[in-house]
Length: 550
View: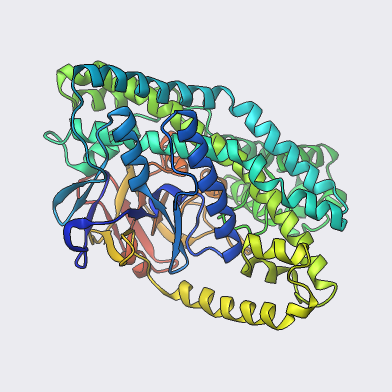
């Protein structure tokens, strides 16, 4: 695996399932509301079963894949490791705990005949991943069509009940693609790290891998950037720029002075309006609901280069970073290493596009939840739309099918009050990176003063926690966040570098930042809290001792 962990209270014998935040972090930005957690849990569990069923690995129905602890989402990483060890002969991934290697599952190297059978199973895994990539366009179009259907409904009670039953069905293929791509990336990164372990530290090896992705194309995050920059060029005309500076965006379609810009921004919202920063929290508004964050980012881009329009596009294909990676591998592994990097690029593209497709599901589900809230508000079971997110998906279904009717008012209000207290408490707690078993054995990444390098480079600037509803003053800044998810693509043309409390170098935003050559440090853990807004901060991801210092 990619990180070293410390576990002062690890259960005896390291017994029990291992639960990690990392695989689902691009979908789960920190503490989730009960509604968002329940939707993610249902969809993840079903998608995991579908994937391994397609492989013929005989997965156990309704396996416990997702759990919630201190408000955070954890994924059972032991089950997949055991499944693939048993049916495909894959050596399981391992955690480095207290300086010792702990495989996630038992494994014996298969003999000749067993190896032949296992080899076919491994080939089937790769073939299925290729199928998911080929079908991604169709999968996304299905999710997109469902999303636009939810935007056009009048939301009668019958429509609420109908859409309620569609959420899992329409989201399965998108989630299957994401989970399988993410899992395969973990294996590929781990394999390269193992090959380089005698020549490079883990930090240096990770930088070599991600730097070799500088020519990576096809990421949705990069497409968002390019569209943002195109919009900035179209909005430099004085009357449009004055409109941007006025900051009155609610009725943009009717107040924007340029018809061509209206059409251009309409195209952007049609393509990306269902996205958001921290979009895995379904309670958060999407860009169609709050276009101000996009428009303020456009204004910041214009103001950062007022007299010299310049499109800061990713570099063209560059063989130097890949060559440096190959030189760090044993000579006998270099051909395979080149193929591995090509495969990593393919899977990063699949991961990025699967998240884009899932964003349609999250946004459509948000629309449904708000419609259900208004239905429950009619008889005062709920008093505001935002209250709906404190209830799990099945509980909202109970409200919509009248199992939780007006006679259940006391129970509903008591549940809401309790959940608010729990949510507020979770926001104040520090959740471990790893859980082991049901006895709450906890592990955190080995404490450092810096984090984990995602993209090489050294930059400096004022620290900004970007992404709120005020001015996006992150031009030339080091942008900081609890988690850098795809929504931060809006900041890629503006910032000099990025840091985050959570996340991994495998995350789609980090892959996009690699293509844009922005230094990134992720996984800072508790040291992230020591960063101060506005203070001049240096991000150095070039050396083994990565630092973020004031």
